[in-house]
Image 1: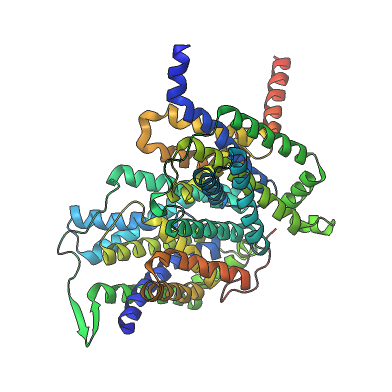
Image 2: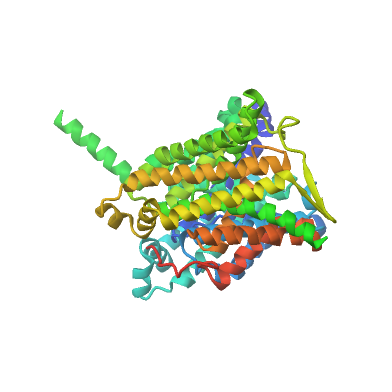
Length: 289
Length: 293
């Protein structure tokens, strides 16, 4: 098992990131599935990461408590800022959430307890691989159950046509707020997990670029099912490792993916309907030949 | 002391206004939030720098050329990214996400090509003169910035209000379909708008490069954030609103730095933005916006 030890010690953060990034992509999927483009998920991740790390570093409370607070605090913040901002539609909401992210960054940068621009260092290593597997599985399970429930159908109705949904008696504002809060909670937990294996976090880790990265993962994978964001998050975690030689142009690749996917695969790489269509056409063609 | 701050605020605010003008023009006519505007602004700055450095062009010529270069980049972005989305009638978030991608590409390309460090205009390019009236200290660069910004803004405003072209653009803003049926070359004017907006963004880039004398690949992002704040404050798509809100943001920032703390400089715009979104989402001058389903 020597090779395994070597492999693990080199790549464990990459392997950890697979799960955490999948969770982040799912967090933005929840809001997108309700027709909201929120660019605040990186900020929520940051709030969760800081909250969880501070609990681990300054109190003797166990890790699950730290993670729970890491999920609850961003959810609470989302509740508070969501009530006024979710009245906004489309691009206005995107801008407001982007603004919120900036405000969080400036606040974190200027507080003492967060370590200011230096961030927090020496966060204890508490995340183990099974924590991530468990929480990712739990997230997927809850979201899958939700999709098939009244909530999921309401989300879809709102996404398709908000006005029609409202006329059908769907509580649009309430469901939007719910999506926003769930997304924030998932992002916060992911942030808490992430902080406890990277040892160090700073305000720069949760800026606009990171919001874009999270969005890229979800859009790349496709947001018509849960498989899409999960896969998108994982592939875009591995891609930089595969492209290590192009390191300085890594962001170019990220941007290109975003543009090309929006232009040519508007539903992402995992689009069940398109794939079904593809295979059917293929088998028909086979039949004719 | 206050007078000095006000002069600094005026020059900062007019750059914000100039930057936001292109941004709001694209939203008004194309109905698209073009988040690559910040990256184009940055490239305009580099274009002027390279032309001054390598071709030793005089500053005013370099600025015109930089506007042309950034205008062409804006045109290319429109042709390659926005046009296919228009053709597909994509939902309004698609162009926003796609232009985030464009911004990422342009920024990291600039970083790869020019390096991440601060670049400066060669010594002697920037006029060194300054004028003193009592305690007031005004540099030639500041005067140039205010004059150039205001001239460009007033030209745009006059075009929009007084010419046939402006009338056509306003018709498109109202409804591209109806404008097309009336025989307006909608696609052509979309290109023209993208070009003009990017050229204005490039001009703002050159002016910011001159006033801080520091050009980096990352200068577009913070400017973009301020531009967003400005166009929401002023009412999206409203040219006069962008001008006034840009000046307003400049004053708010300078006064915050002077009298509160420089730590919160970057939060001022977004604080204002939040406030406006809560109180009057249509912005200071915006009409009540019809919801686009």
